[in-house]
Length: 425
Image (cartoon, rainbow, N blue to C red; front, side, top):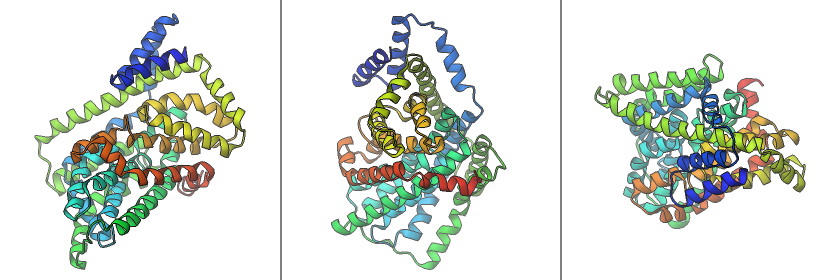
């Protein structure tokens, strides 16, 4: 049963059918072939969406779109440039810092690329960086939105696994720091070796002015995350706070948003939300089919047949997740794989919270790798470069990501220490 669904989904996906539709057709055909009740479809869809936590998803998407049109992205980039633009490879570092800040507000890699991408690529090419390299670092840094809180993907993963959403968001801080350090180190080495770019120098007065103008934009992640981690608000309420704050900044403080922009923002947010949640609903049915077919048990037996050492199990699962992430949408993969892999994880004594963060980090490579990486496609479109050229220029950043993922697999404290420090659990 599971293999039938996987085969149908794979064939349709390879033929270019949208992933959500491919998965939906695979589910429908499997239900008919194996004479399973079609009533499973509405039941599973309703159950998967009947969660207060998931209300945060459309709200963070809305907040990201408001930020995109409210002038927040421009101020963030200018502030980052004023601080780290003077270093060798400066605009590459600016790219990393700006994506970290914006990802911490929007929680979406596509919002990051769509808002900052054009600004970053143009600025880097103006300062003599090769266009493919500028596109590559713009793309890979968008992965930070998956682990920097408040991440939409992390919220969905935590809700699916039944672990604390606040804990999962805090757990993403460790991987985020490693990714940031790795990307900046790689950017510095490559810039020095190949002579990329020129240094962007600003006077102390200009630095102070850029930072002062950006204070309202930079205040968003601080206010949102402090509110969530202190327990003042839930992640869902924090998402609502992000929307209100973004509207206030865009309309009142920066005055770059007009009333006529609201319908565009709402339509764009609705389309994105519909896409994300449709994938989630269809994937929940697939996960149910895999469960009743006993796929989690078979995978558990196969993994434990290799080793029962938690470290080895995490490395094996990590390789599996990275490979799956390259061919499947991240959200669909989370909703299918969490129920499948969780029994194995619990059996060998791996902390569920650590596993959720590790899973999100591994699958996030799929956002920036062929053939289905949404951030890769978005960057290719914005940069007007082929997917092959962007992916090729990203190869050393892919190496950085793999090293970070391996470190996460063998050192769980990277994930768990921030959780203990911020939440006390």
